[in-house]
Every structure is written in structure tokens, then in C-alpha cells.
Length: 456
Image (cartoon, rainbow, N blue to C red; front, side, top):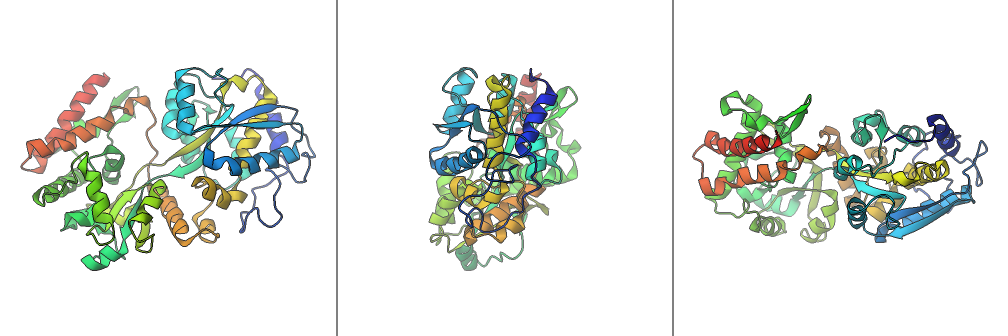
């Protein structure tokens, strides 16, 4: 959607907000030397010398555990611009998004500024429930991006407008139980090739679940579904003979991994029992060495590894498939504004000021401790040199490295059916018991053929 107010006027407001500030130097400890630093775009403790925010009032959605961090960010904005008012609406992000999606932007229970995961963007944008954000101006002033559009910035761009500003990056990493690896004679100093695994418990990968399965398909650049001009296509509708060799190799590794588990009578390829099996085997004393998961799973991994004493974390490429590193998706969250405030330049400017403070890289440690969020524009080296714990730094560096090699997450709505299509195709092997990889692939192909027929 387009803002009704003139673009030039909007830029003036944002520039007034952000002027006078080059890319901030991220240093450690952050925010602790003076008890509170200036907001982005302010060189003094008062208003920006080149302009100020007019009196405006907005509401900001915040999770229960994030309140203290959000209040500190709001204080920095209000200290610089005393005429503004920032209120908080304490509600879980998904609950808030469900309210927005089931009603409309005018609903008073919906905040003016809120967080959303990348996969919700397309649906909300199609319903005109997101306002445009001057993301490039904010990004230029915050600094840290070599190519803003190559990451989350580009994912949040619809047409010529940015409908959210990058909040944090997310992707999957490889967790390893070092005590189990030692007992099983597994060398963690080199990547584990899935095709070479002899004991199925050594690699606990729920690849039947599409969220995790794409780590395998992405290793061979298999497109489960992609846009091709004005239509959609899938690599998995090709006949086996026409599938590229590297894609055949990845499917073959998947088939042999399924067969290894079937022959050992494990429950890994069981949509219900598989998760318990993974947790049991990965716990210290089991045989599990590697599993994949997201940064939000850290506490659970620590619980199963003697409080983290037996835990190592690697980029997801530490596991390879037919010689190629696994890779997941570039995912994450964004900060978006309610389109109902687009007509009010002062409210938009205030919302963008709050966005800039929430993701101000000078407070990257505080942000992670409060929310677990990792900033896209703070390099791994800066996180490594921070006061975060050893395991936190290890996790963050692995996420950043995994994120770099991963493709962008598909956000188009047509991707929805892929989740069950892949899962049903792979799990059908349990009943069909294909005798070879070509027969196994035929089950996946049939599942995707049916999906594509429905998309036409």
C-alpha cells in the first residue's frame, strides 16, 4: 500500500529523527558505562539539534519477558523527545497477530508497532494489515549491513515498500553431545557425512518433518516449490532419470538413512514417537551425537547435556549430505507498523524511532539476554568478544555462520501445502517399504504431483 502523505515529507521526518549519527561503534560492555546512552540519531541528551519529534502517542506490543528491555528503549527515545508518549500492550506476539489477522487494523486491541515472524508477512500484507517503513534510512543510520536487501531486509520488501524492519535472524544449527561422541568414537573435529553414519542414533535428524527436512533438500538446492515467472514449479515432479545428479544423491542419502533406521527398528521416522526417541538418545548416556535445531531450543539442549557441560554447537554445515553441507533457511522476525497510523506523520516517525532503538546495535547484549534475539547487523566477532556466556556466544556464532550459507525462506502463500506434501511422501515409505531409491522417490514424486495439480 502507499502512504497518502507525501514521500518527501515522510523522509524529512525520519531524517530529523536519525540525523547526526553515523554507524554506532558496537563495544562491550554496552549500555553499562553511563547508565544509559543516547537514542539513535541524537548527539545530546535532549532533542536532535536539527529537528525534533512532534507530540505523538503510539502503543507498542511487547512480550511479558521483554518489558524491561522495551521500557529502556522507550526511555531513550522519550529522554531525547519529551513530548512523545509510548504506551505498551503486553501480549504474546502470536496472540497479537491472530487478533490482527482475524479483525482489522483499526481494532484498538492491535498495537501501532509490533513484532512478527517472517512467515506471517505475506498473509498480513495481502490483507493490507501492514504499513510501510522507511527501512533503508533506518538501516543506513544503524549501520552494519553490506547489502540490506540480501538478507531479511529483502524478504520484508513487497514491491517498492518495506513492510517490516529486521528484528533478528533465525536458522537451524547443529547441536552435539561431546560425551556421547567420545563414548561412540565419533570425531567432532570434522564434519559428519550422513551417508557414512553406521549407527542411526549418531545422527538424530527428523527429516520427515519439512521444517528440518529442508536442511537436507537445501544441501542439494532442491526446490520443493519455487516461482517461475507467473507460475510455480517443483523439482520433485521430475522423473527420477531427469533429476540432476546432485539432487539424486541427496535423495539417495535420505533413503539410505530411512533404511538404516528401519533396519535398526528405531522410531525416528514416526511422526509422534520420533521426537521422544531423539530426546532420549541425545541425552548424555545415550548414543546420540548430532541433532539439528533452532537457537530457541538451547535450554532444552542444556537440560539433556548435564547443564550444557557436554554440549557443543556448530554451524549446520557440520553435517554433510553427499559431501555438501546442510543448510536451512534465512528466517527471523521483523518490527512492523499498523497501517492505521500511516496518515499521521508524527506517529510514523515515533514508531520508526522506537524501531531504531529496539534494534540499536549498541545494546546487542541486552537484547539477546532479554529476548534471545540475534541482530543481523552485528558481526560474529563482536558477539564473540562480548560478556555473554561461553555457550551463548557459541550458539550465536553458529547461527550467524549457518545463516550466511542459507537461502531465504519462501514467504509466498502457495508454499503452505509443501509442509504436508513432503511429510506424507517421506512417511509413506514406512507402509510401502520401497525396495530402492528410485521407488522411494516415486512416492515423493506422486505426493508433489498431486500438490502441483491442486495449485493449477
